[in-house]
Length: 271
Ligand code: C2E
Ligand code: MG
Ligand code: MG
Ligand code: MG
Image (tube, rainbow, N blue to C red; front, side):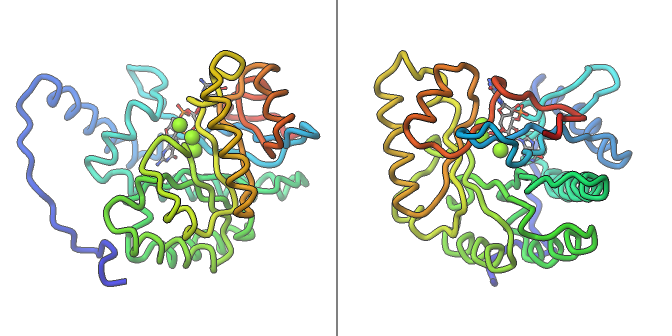
């Protein structure tokens, strides 16, 4: 546990001179303000079993309604949030909002199996992450197994042993774990074998050319086969066409997420 990021982290001063830096500095100030005013919001995108087309859960996706710039997508501000470590307080707001939403759905009589939450490596590697997560989730009245934590392969880049220890602690505490954007990052069979995963998510870059690129299709088939042999379920991301849907169904992929069945929405359809 010693190497987990403690409270007193060293902050490295980085000069910012270019026009791009000035622009991102302005955005950073806006982001700080948005965090303190709790202006970031979550959209929810349904995930469905392929066979039954039945809702199996939601992924929470962050949105920033900027006063002048309109809705800013996470692809634009998550990298900045990670550089500035603002992703840590943002991450806690995300977890808190997702738990409250799930609790509200529960109270209204909807049985939503789980909500999936994207967790940045920086946040997950904080020494007190598991303890704080337990406190927050337990206080919300949501069962831990209804929370799926989405992690990426980059989590294992810096210190794989510490990261694996943290993942095991989360698994033991009862959370579901999903490996996001599978196949696009730092993949190693050795690491895959060691992670206590419930699910892998095939990245949309492999899905988008189903029917046109036989290499993508071959990779998808091996990912499905590999996961199932390891006892891990598979979800395909970015499913937009019925051709993709039928290919995935035919080859035994378990679940899907994509514009074909649902887009991310503030108030998603609950069945
Ligand atoms: P991700 O976790 O891989 O999320 C899936 C992304 O694919 C989402 O983009 C979603 O809107 C988009 N998507 C879903 N279905 C389709 C489809 O059929 N076609 C296409 N073209 N795209 C589809 P989004 O919401 O812009 O999020 C981008 C990334 O930002 C996420 O990728 C995730 O890495 C990150 N992110 C989002 N919310 C959070 C958050 O709360 N915390 C952290 N740390 N990262 C987040
Ligand atoms: Mg995700
Ligand atoms: Mg993904
Ligand atoms: Mg992605």
